[in-house]
Image 1 (cartoon, rainbow, N blue to C red):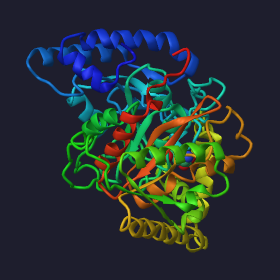
Image 2: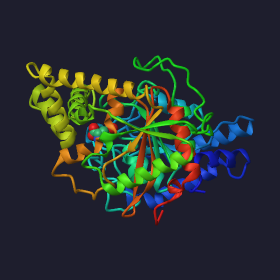
Image 3: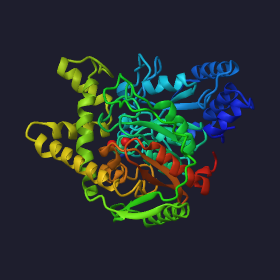
Image 4: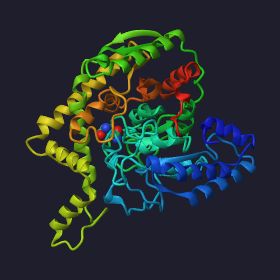
Length: 483
Ligand code: GLN
């Protein structure tokens, strides 16, 4: 049962081949047995899950239907969940029980999805390896000595290990697409504003976006359907109609114009990944797509711009965790300053502290113009590059990451080398565009992803291309040995 996709589960439930309760219990048993190897969950909510599964079965018995009704999922542990610990993988929030559900959580619950628990992540979603969690590193099910990517590494590892069919993630600079690539999943970052950020604990508010991680594009369409939509509680949510994301999965790719940016294939890209990306291009050409080389001339500035803007926003967002309003409080403070200092020094891990320092510096008087304002200008140039490119092509294609999953600990002494792994994903966040990563082969037994980017609100197009590719390839069906 654990091999079933969301689409297959929906059919099985509709045909009464099994109940949501049976499925939920099977997966919970599998998690208890296998998760100790990969550490993908921070909190399991078994009782709630069984209660939700029974309720979904009752709704089906009453004649209700729906692709998510009774489907097991899990939430990245930065989506607030009423009465359940929402930790952001930080000591700072180790004892925080959210007083309300995030919009994404309540929408999926209303659609009948069964939440098994809260998945591990990099502390406050800062990272690309899921090594900075207060609850320990997550291991990649494809090779337990390697990272699963991050920051949605727990969601990715759990789905890759067949502990559940799909999970939510968030993507500020690649945190859905990059772990999807490194664990052989399909992951989609929607257009900024498509999915509500209400109740999604902020890292960098102008970049953060929630989205689905699953094994197939078809399943991403199902989960995204349950997550997307205008939310008046989120001031950056966009009041656009939500299309049926599954409607165009089977559209033909004949005449689809795919742009391949020359800059995506420059130095730093593992040549074996370049070859797999070229194979995927050939596959899409066979399906009727037309390939064109394009240029994104400002791409080289993306990492420096992102690593000013994201920490700047983070330093502001994380100021609320002061031991008074939210978060860990130190013992026996001498005075208020001591309370702030020690609570924050004890509550935040080293990567979070590094980002707060960099961000506060970039925003400080005298440096604001030199760093933050410059970075914002680069952001506009990058957006303009995409707008120009999408005048010529329908989709942009390239690698998701320059390298396959690295060994746990390998980049610990050099944070910048980890930041460089985001080179292909962060441009979509800076521009607010939707992006998807899909499985495209293996290097040394480790999965490799191909990234697709589309114009604003064209998630359906991304899902269509990925689904057609998946009908003609079998990379996405491979599962890691031992799981
Ligand atoms: N790796 C990037 C960072 O560390 C992106 C993280 C994310 O998307 N949440 O900021």
